[in-house]
Length: 397
Image (cartoon, rainbow, N blue to C red; front, side):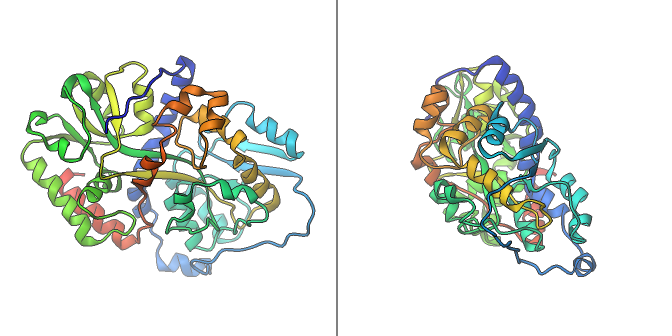
């Protein structure tokens, strides 16, 4: 089913989002490769003395949250006035830093102090899900209490029930997005609704796929009856074989990172695997561009809030998460970032402040789209290497 996006975006917001897309999506999309680069040797783990998979908890003495909260987040990921409103509402002082430019770089910076249980200068950070899982496995995260975050009940059910962190005991989703198919209607001459449409001979040499294994293979696996939520070697290889077949036929123009946008807008690429947020931005200049979640489903990415076990203010961190999870507050974040909400029932709140965002299925997807969108399971180092190697043999990466 083709999904049209109705409205252009404010030019100033567009400028902010374009910068955001370049810095944000490049690292999220490369999560598998980043995970591989983050493999830790046994000697390092032994030196850390960590209890893999354990999380820590804190004792609540019943007093309200207070003091200073230090937050480490990605650039251009916070709505204007949001922090000031939180400070007014809670009396907590926020030290907010946009110093999270790359999961891998951030981990390289904090792994040594965390291994020694030394302060990293942040009470709350916002890594991508795969990194949150790695930190949890190393025992470097505190649990997030239900009592401290009663608004956790507002998280989308599909995220609450995920297999990576059921009930979100150590991670609190912040923003999400979709990995689906974009197409230039002027170049295709028709709507695209399925993965098989990408292999139409009419589009020979005009198709691009992501070079990242997870983003490139996930939706193809879904079309073959497999799922990235529980990936198997056989399922991944089946998807790789299909990509190899189409590449050998000359169907695929090239494998891309975030650099498909210009060719898609120009019509050099007719059909491309794409990130929903990119298409929201591109449509402002080219209404011929469309984004669709294939009938068989798409994949998702999620950035998530975590509390390091070296936090100096657990209560304030939980108070922040709870404030974010108030739907009226969260709508302001979604309207600014243009990412997919992680909370359920956001339509009415978005309508109050940004009717265009509320009506935009790339920002506020209907439930049937969310139900068809699947996230990758946390991969072991062995799986990461196996899947990346198999796909790179086709992409040349």
